Amino acid sequence: MADLVVVGASLAGLRAVEAVRNDGFSGSVTLVGAEEHLPYDRPPLSKEHLADDEPGDSTYREREKLDEIGVELVLGESATALDVDARRITVGDREIPYDGLVVATGAHARTLPASVLSPDLAGVVTMRTRDDSRHLHQLLRSGHPRVTVIGAGFIGSEIAAVARKRGHDVTIVEALPVPLVRGVGERMGQALTALHERHGTRVLTGASVTEIRGSSSVEAVVLDDGTVIDTDVLVVGVGAGPNTAWLESSGLTIDDGVVADTTLAAAPGVYVAGDIARWPNALFDDVLDTPMRLEHWTAASEQGARAARNAVDPASAQEYTTVPYFWSDWYGSRIQFVGVSRSGEGFPEVETELVMGDEDGSFVTLYRCGDRLAGALTVDRPAEVMQYRRLIMKRASWDEGLEKAEERRQRAAKKAEAAQQG
Ligand SMILES: Cc1cc2nc3c(=O)[nH]c(=O)nc-3n(C[C@H](O)[C@H](O)[C@H](O)COP(=O)(O)OP(=O)(O)OC[C@H]3O[C@@H](n4cnc5c(N)ncnc54)[C@H](O)[C@@H]3O)c2cc1C
Image (cartoon, rainbow, N blue to C red; front, side, top):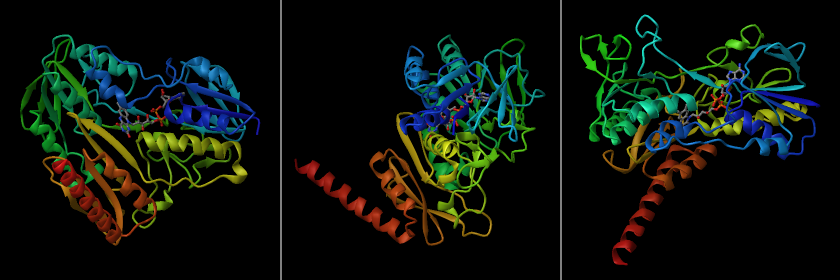
């Protein structure tokens, strides 16, 4: 294997190039990225970078570090085509050949149709890039008291929480009757929504946006029931779509992401990683029968390394399995989730049980699919969540999940008793 090319210079792409260099891979390594910036961390964009007085910089590595390990960087240019048979990609007017390719072009923020939202209206942001975060940072600091967030997903919720903490008047508009139902299920979606309400953020559910008003800047959001929300800033947080447009003519299977096998291979010599990857996660074959696409930091990091190792040594390609994990920070509370919250057709429905704490404060809720422990959600219980991740990784039964919960409860009680005495 002589040439590894990685397309997408963000988390998955960076982990890809570093993993093979750490392993001693001696061939050439090229990292192609559409953004001008060096790879940077996205989670802080909707959290501390908005909250801090100065916009932060979450660049992972300086250019010298990447030079040192022998990574050729091609930044500020997009790959526009992939020829799987000839093993080459097109970038600008150049063809770059590869022996192994990692596709890690991630996702973009979805927006509203032009019939509802004029693309020229000022005061409107989506949140995916450093530039998006800096734009919102500047808006929040320049005398715009009213903020409306469309979409009560995790990123929209984080932004709402920061804006609220900064003293803005914040409204979230959500089309679903219960926010986050796809991510954490109905009951926990309600429990998390209550966090917003406790902090004075208004949440309107089951509401569709029919019109965005404003002459040069956004002025109001109009809902299908006629409600008019006057606003100075509009955050469109309606999810992300995988960046697959450049692969349309490649012959790869594209279905809300690039479809790969259990080793992340999408075609001979081509592996996928990160938010763009859809692959069968064999660890959950008794819960889901469809391939998974995650938009989680940890999976992107792990997949980047696995995909690159498989790309440079396809003869010994290894399967990638994981227990999905994500976190989110709202109003100083840390929400963490491991596993899956929904099952596929034909599998037992997923049920939840609160096993520690209470829903108004810090708590642990477990997810059950048939006899299996399928997931765990924690709020402000950082010591708990990885206990359950380990169990799920071992395909632990529901009863083992409950036993662990009992053990953790007893431990917490003893700790509280000791603290009281001492
Ligand atoms: C604001 C925000 C907050 C988040 N917070 C959390 C969190 O709290 N917890 C959590 O678990 N996850 C979080 N995530 C998700 C996590 O950051 C992503 O899962 C991760 O960034 C995915 O990495 P990636 O490398 O697959 O894709 P991306 O980070 O999307 O990067 C893909 C890169 O490819 C580039 N690219 C696209 N097309 C081309 C092309 N044709 N040619 C060349 N380059 C191209 C893009 O410009 C981009 O730089 C958050 C994401 C965002 C946006």
